[in-house]
Image (cartoon, rainbow, N blue to C red; front, side, top):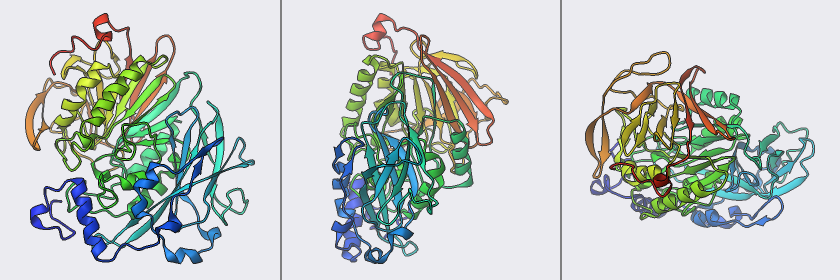
Length: 541
């Protein structure tokens, strides 16, 4: 969708960065008198940890220009305003921190979370922080929208403990038996490593397929879920161009759709190209920061809310914002000035040296390795991050962006170090890294230039024609040997983590109907001395 849709001058339509788009939209709609005064009444409210105070932080400050009131809500009875769209996320320490988020259709007074160890005893009340968004009518077909997102930070929790919670506000008490609001639950990470499951996918949106995947994920009883970006597709173009507009109401649909899972499974998201929304902030992530409460331990939680890390048991997870390094979609390319890549290098080293961590899992949106005809591989990711994954012996990389399932052989130095047929075990130290594209969460599917190859339909090929994006948005053709499993269908990833003397990741890909399409295991041998000193012998990059 290259045609400008908000009256942007033609000479600017194809070459504005995200900050330039933000400046243009703010100037355009402010002149029309869309912005309204009176932000104070919907301002950020201080949050409170479970056993200690927490003040409204950088997120609220970043959104101060968009905290707007809806005058009519002053006359709405709070007892009639029902919360919806509950979703959980870990804090930086999943053993002791949980973030509870939800939405209300109107501004409310004194929102809160009630928490307890029994569903009938939610005696502890935690004040919630309000993050409000105003979206103008970006086209004649779209209305202006006011949305109110609420977040409560729970700190100093007990490891391995199941808690019950309910959300409410003045006039709406979740413990009231007349309410239909179900009590939610969550469980913190254990103090010591135990077996657990996590799930992952990207490119979800709102659809029957997305809903079906959600319910299958719930059936895996995961400890958390990784969402590799392109979350709801309010911006259905995703080209990162000034003509892109977004319907903020799609977020309401998405959060309502996802609540059945995300209200009990921490939903750990990162940012894709469809998640850049220029109106809210210069970096395009003001909407993201309003709707999600994610760990704030990345290189810059305000500028890059989708870059962070956490440790669950024996597994460290690192989320990255690949918009920063993408050669294909350049609206935010280079926005961190290299800080994200430097942080990644430092964080992977810290995690690899930390006692008790066996596996490093990295997830982000744009693919390092894929062969679809839609996006294929992003050379920006390969240039910036793949050498670091090799250097620090990452065990598994998960991407979205391409709306299919695809899995590589074990790669080292961009070359196939070991072929990994379905059902095989790969040693991530000795053999290399397996890269998984899990972009079949719910949006319309892409296709490959060759036949599918998956469990039940193995079609191994020595070479697959494809391409990668190079600097300047240039397509460079390549014939690849690493495309081992391909599936054109909606699907998701389930990973069973086994700690102990011989730790293992049991990785399974499941189709929307529940059938298995791929499986492989990841183990780790002791690194050789040269590898332990920093990855000598990786080969050319």
